[in-house]
Image 1 (cartoon, chains in turn green, yellow):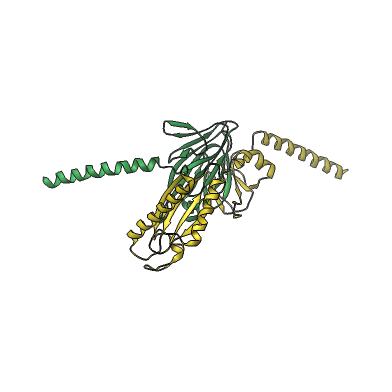
Image 2: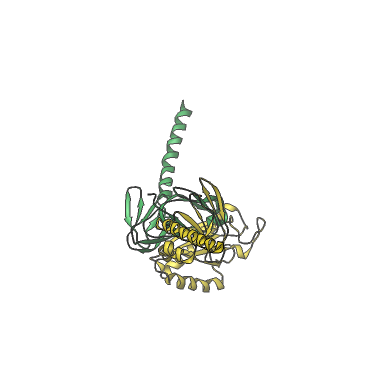
Length: 153
Length: 203
């Protein structure tokens, strides 16, 4: 009886102490906006901010450029991405902890144009990097490439 | 006579192809990927999984359709400019990396690295909206846990110095890889000057 009580207490304590860790991990920037022209937005859940130089990119951020706009961002692992007008990209997974071999970068390009320069994650663990599109999935082996996703009409 | 009709047929075919081609390009170039050389001059590989199977690009300026319905093709400069000019123009400056080295056991820079710190400041100031990451590393002398802490001490000391030298408004992130990310591979418990370092990246 007593043992069971202790177990529950320990479990509660564990949850309480690890919860802040999780929320902290989610709000820590994984990159920053470096260039903007025109109107571009960074959304995190329900929160949406107009992109400026220095706007943080978080795990799960959705990046969007309007007509005539462009945007450039850099990530912690030195991956660079820049976008032309009418573009929408979401950062679905980002793990960068080389000492623990925790590496992952997956993004989703829904429409528009993307210029991608691979960073350290792609060099250390090529299989961990992908760009999904409505049609195909792009795997990256340490390089620069361009992708265009046309709106399906 | 026979020759002329053949020529006419050829001309008609070419005209038809040109018209078809014109129609196709009006619809746009479709969704595709193109491989480029990166800023260091390296061309890697892009692997595209499409509903039709897998395509691998290894040649610079070669492209492939995302729906997989076309053979890979070369993309001309003017098309690249038309489709990707804006995205390419928005590319951020490539990150710059500096390695600073420490005297054994603590967070005191070697004389040479003290001079290099000035260069880090200059290069940071040259950027419009810089952010910096400082990663501390150690050699394998001592226990791994203690080295994790030592790496963090080195990184924190460097971040503090950068702030004191005038970068108080720059975002600086600090972390330690301890002895887990050696520059020079050594056995455990080996003092190695090149492994006692911080890696500073300016983005």
